[in-house]
Length: 285
Image (cartoon, rainbow, N blue to C red; front, side, top):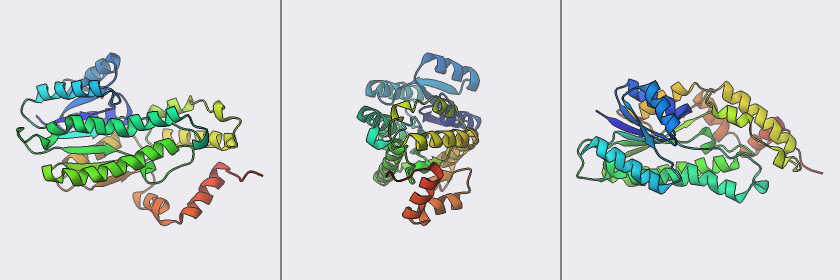
């Protein structure tokens, strides 16, 4: 049976990816951080879902998770690793806590490399294992190429993840392991309920208070009307199974050519002005 590890599988994109992959005959080791989520996923997704306790910021739990998977698959190789775990830290960069900024990178970047290093032997770097090398799917974002104000920590982590993925893809060619980026736009997941509860009052005395409140309203509305997570799960499955996969899949509510044009073709100064107008970012007197 082909096996895949998916981190951050308790809800949203990770949970949907696990469901889609199980439907296609995979066994999924679903990364979760607590027993309640493990029990719920087992009940919802059935026997082919194997909950895996792992915190990507804790190297010891990552190592134990890799040992657990190694014991379960014997001498075979993993068909894939989906690095999905992630958080979004909002706030204006000049007022942001450096500890919060560091936490963003610990989860979204350093954690991804920690997991990748631990599972690489199971994917294909260990020549003693049998089977075709697996693939690594990195979950980025449209924010990995186009950074919104007040989401600087998140965008910076995703820009960095895309650079890491490109270097890694070229380094792992010698093992036959492919690295593929999946970059969705806003996805309709419970993360937007958490966004609604984000406290922006610490920034009330900054020049950004009004624009922050506007962005929060816009992001919540966009997310709740965003992509169904099942569609992103299907894109992840394609990245893992296509005979000739792309190096990067962008999937948004806005058609991809339009998204790419807005992010990459328009002059940056024009994009700056459009964003400033939309959020009410006015020059201070």
